[in-house]
Each structure stands twice: as C-alpha cells, then as structure tokens.
Image (cartoon, rainbow, N blue to C red; front, side, top):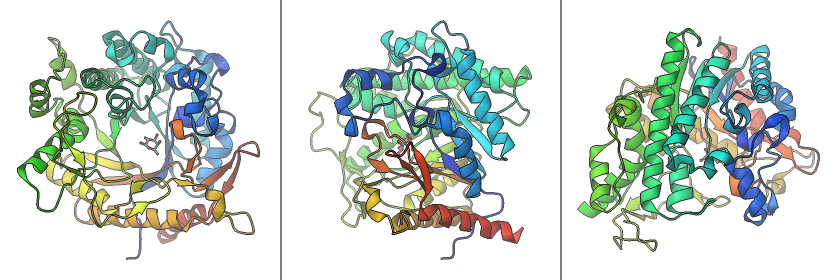
Length: 466
Ligand code: FCB
C-alpha cells in the first residue's frame, strides 16, 4: 500500500512537561511526585536517572520547536506542570507561567499549533502529602488549577486536554503498586479512578465557563487523552472469556468513553465492582458534576493491544478481584526491545469501534511510537541512527489509520510519541522513541535519525500536491 496522507489530517508530535522540561526546581517550580520518588529511591530509575532534567526542553524549547518545524510537523502536544504553574497557595506562579507563555509564543512564531494537556501523572508533592487523588479537596484544587490555566492562556492556546491516560495512576500507583507510593489496594485504586473522573468533569465545566466569559478563543476545544484500545480475547471465547473482556473494557475504556460522550459512568461496571467488594464511594450531587464531563473530542494513545481471557483464579495475590488473565496470542509479533506486542490493526479496530458506537465524536491518534533500547547500535558511519524498524512501525500504523478513515472513522490527525527522545518515568532514557536523538553525553545535543527524514519526506509529498 502506498501511504498518502489526506489533506485535512494533521501530523505532529506528542510529549509531556514532566518528561521533557527538567529545571525541576527552577523559577519557583514545586516538587512533584516524580521528584519525591527520585529523591527517595534513585536506584528505582534506570541508570539512576531521576526526574530532574527531562531532555532539557526548558532550555531548548526554541531549538526543539524549530526542529519539529524543520521536519514539517504542524502541531505538538505537551503538558503544563501543575507544580510549575501554581504555588502552594493555589495562586499562579508568574515565573512558571512565563515559561509556558514563551513556549506558546515560540510555537506561534514558527507556525506550529500547540496542544496543551493539564496533567500527565505529575501530582504536586504537597498535594500528594494531603492524600492526592484520594482526597476530594485535591479534586477541587485541580479545578482551580484548570481555571487558572484557561484564563491565563485562553487567548494563546486553542486545544486543551484535561488528562493523559487517567487510567495509569489508579493502576500503577494504587492497584498494582509498581509506581511510588507502591499501594496495592483495589478499593483505593477505584476511588482514585473515580475522583480523577470528577476532576476531569470539573475542569471541563471550568473550560465552558471560561469560554462563556470570553477568556478562550471562540473555537477552543477540550478533550481527554487515553489508551482506549479495545481488548481482544480468544477466537472461540467461552462466556467467562467474554466476561473478562467486559470488565477489562469497562474499567479501561468504556468508563472514560461514556464519561466523554454522555457524562455518565458504566453502571454495569460499578455494580460488578460493588459485588466484588470494591464499592466506589459516590456522594450526592456527583452525577451533576459527571454530566459536565462531555468533551469536544478525544485523543487515542496506541502502542499495543490488550488481550485477555478468563482468569484462573478469581482473586489475585493482593486479595483483589481478578477480572482477567493475559492472553498470549499465538501469532503475536513483538517489539523485542520494549516487550510490547506490535499490532497495527488495533488502531483501525479502534476507529471502527468509534464509528459504530460513538459516531459523533471525532478523535486523533495522540500517541503512537516505538521505544528501542541501546539504539546507538544502529548508528551508521556518519553517526546517524538507522531506525528502519521505527519507519516500518509508523508506516504500518498510518496505513491502518488511513484505511479506517476511508471506511468512515472520524480520525483527524496523528501525533508521534516522543519525537525527540525523552525521559520515560522509571525507565528514564532506557527506551528511545524519537525521530530525533538526544545525546546525554553531549549536553543533550539533538540529532536527526533516519526516521526524521522519512517523516519529512512523507509530509512534503502531500505539500507538493497542494
Ligand atoms: C504512554 C505515556 C507516555 C509515554 C509512553 C511511552 O503510556 O502516555 O507518557 O511514557 O507511554
């Protein structure tokens, strides 16, 4: 298949504040939960590289934006850090705001659209100390932060997002406990997921209020970004396999899709959870808040499919109800470097699901990418990384995206994750995702990889037709 990008389809980059900015204590930035973890157990991070430096975007943002432009990308998403924008009294930190104003002005100057997300797993430490997402006051504080951001940047930024992958913190910090503070408690995890849903809804409410009051651009839009991939099970499933599918899909996807499209949460999921001893505490008046959670569009992050089957045991080693076991598809193809399955058709299946079940909502691919360890192995004599595997990965995914559009999916753009190599949580710089290399031994110097030339040529081809 010859890959051709449609005319009204944007092509850009995805990144996040905590993974790129660095400058973790500069200009009044407060500690966030990643800094707390880095300070308390640096050995938990690959090569002992904590959250301190990102890829130095704080210093290099202008160079980076020019680089994105030089390979013909038209947009990029990053996130504001709550711990940079606000002080401990929930007031704007002018120096922190100054940084994001500079980024917005620079994007505008170079003709690249800036998408801004408000939260990417980066709770300020002082709020975490007050209970983080388990505390309703923190939910309220998030709404204040969102309101402040909309009013401060409303005339500079058109595309806003409340959360990136809101499922990740409930899972990683509270249920499986693999991320600081390593909690393994299904009830607390579900309550956190519920509170994040309220926080999202309050922020959307603030967004529309700010719009009404004239603080935003008239065509400003709000969305939510998640890894909404529909799960798969065995080809000839038992009723128990289908039940595993229902709950996996329910907690990970339908939960957020229902919230963004109808302002409700899936009743069947809440009921099953309650019957398994994981009730969610809902207060009177919450339904009114959730109703505000409807968004203008969605971002869909896609790396790998989820495959599940009926669980062997109904309870896991932490005493949590177990709704599904992983299913290893015999035909799977792996990214051996990252340990993730590569299944490009999943991106198409999501498009078709959206067309069928949520036909009014448009979306874009907000993250997709391939992380590879020890990438320096692939350097040629001239020093350029020959990442043909990445080109193949992106090409195949884009082909399936195009097929979904041809068949009626309302997919309007694509952002590649990690266009410039960045810091990936406790994996730090282990797996590199970029079209652009970051040289950690040479002052974070940036260098194009082969894939950068490839994507540039792909976009140029469309431009030639204009
Ligand atoms: C996604 C996250 C992003 C990045 C990629 C590799 O789940 O949104 O921050 O780490 O994975």
